[in-house]
Image 1: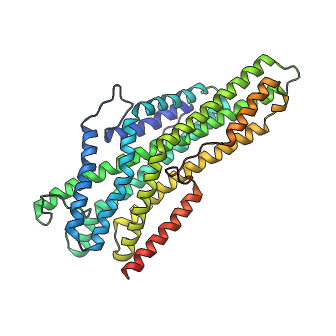
Image 2: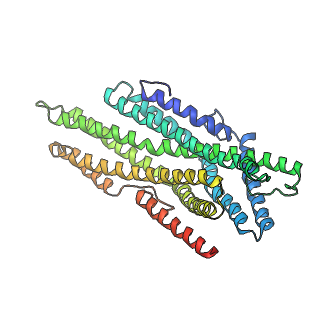
Length: 385
């Protein structure tokens, strides 16, 4: 990773990595006058092709329940991917504005030694996590890709990467097998790249709430220093309080935007993750499904990412409450004191990420989901046995 001294430089560098993956899927909204292009069309075509051929494959493989389970897992991946593509496309102007808004935040404090160091460290961590997410998705994709080679080497048997047949193509013939495998490889590459880009964008936006809170708490520290001076400058204090109130309002607005944009995506992610993880565990246990090992890891990482980001939101909101309460607000004059009372009141009802509005998205939810997946897994085993 390249070395930077300013957080906005690291932000730009990280954005280039995200844009490269988004551009591959045809959804690089940062392009000037972005329009629906052939890569976007290819991505949409892959989704429709997967849905249609997966439905056809369910009928084709009946009553082989193991093969049918492999096909059902494709619907779990579609449940995750379709909302991310759809909302990313229809809200492209919003995301473009948010990218610029975050960059201005990092650029504004480029010469502030303490804040620049904190923001730079944050962006470095986001970049590392972005790369790890991409590696996890690649690992999951490789599981499907090398599966036919492993089976051919071990059993001298020709199998498809994905248990999905294409309409009007006989995958049992040599030519049909080559065509089906080529189409499936395109699907795997586009799916891995698209999901990686979408999850990395979510990571970038939610994790940057930490930057907003760091700036907010620093402004409170500076206000405390002003209030403790022997000769107070009331004009500067009033302006500082106004700045703090504005930043608090920006944080509330930012959190509200996150919840609105990701409430459906989070719900789809949880449903898709429960479906796929239960199925992969079942197939690995029953038939030693080789791609399942990498895909289990990728699914758990996805689920953990969303729940961790939801926890970050909650923890940072609690930090805001503590910072406001511990400020030297009792030294303020009455008008500024009223502003602090209003901020403290609003902070008591903070916004948090939810699973479709039904449950909070945090680590407790992650544990509950894993317990539920284990229950589904044992139920499937009991049903078969």
